[in-house]
Structures are given as structure tokens and as C-alpha cells.
Length: 109
Image (cartoon, rainbow, N blue to C red):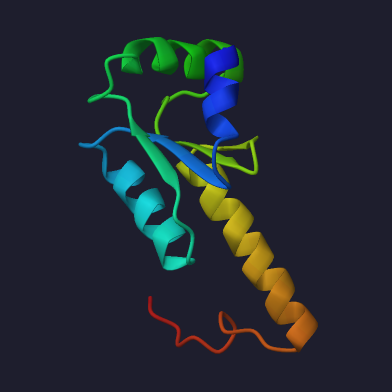
């Protein structure tokens, strides 16, 4: 677990990922699009990947184990947690600006 914590603090954004997982790909793309350059550890290509995956599952309670996103050394969660946090941030930002892009979007049943 200490090694996992150390790796999570090496850069501002760290993602433990699996190269074949579509949600991992989505999170990596999103973080890059936001202008960050995350450190990415592909658990399925890393010789220590199974040990790191075990630590993510047992110490952080993350299931599925990837993607596991750390920002500033703090565990942010998996894909759903990161998407939820960003949507909340964007909606608060728009509320302060007096705008709502979601409210002006066309209705599509």
C-alpha cells in the first residue's frame, strides 16, 4: 500500500488503468482534454500490476480496480466518481456565471 501511495503522489494526476478497458480510455482522454498530463500505470502491462490491483481493491475498496484516479495524491475514485465530480464542478461554475448549457440544450426524447 505504501508503494501505491508513493506512486499516487509522483504527479498531479495519476491513473491506474487497464489498456483494454473502455472506461479507462474515457478517463484518460478526459484528463488529457482538461489539459493535464497524468502519470498512467497500465496494470495489465506492469510486472507489479497484480499487486497494485490487489492494493486498490483491498485498501481503497475500489471495484472495479481500474480506472483508479488520484489527483494531488488524493484518491478521487473510479470513472463514475470522476465524471460525477466534474459534472458537479461544471454545473456550479455555470451557476456562478449565470449560465446553464444544460438548460439550453434541445430536448431529444
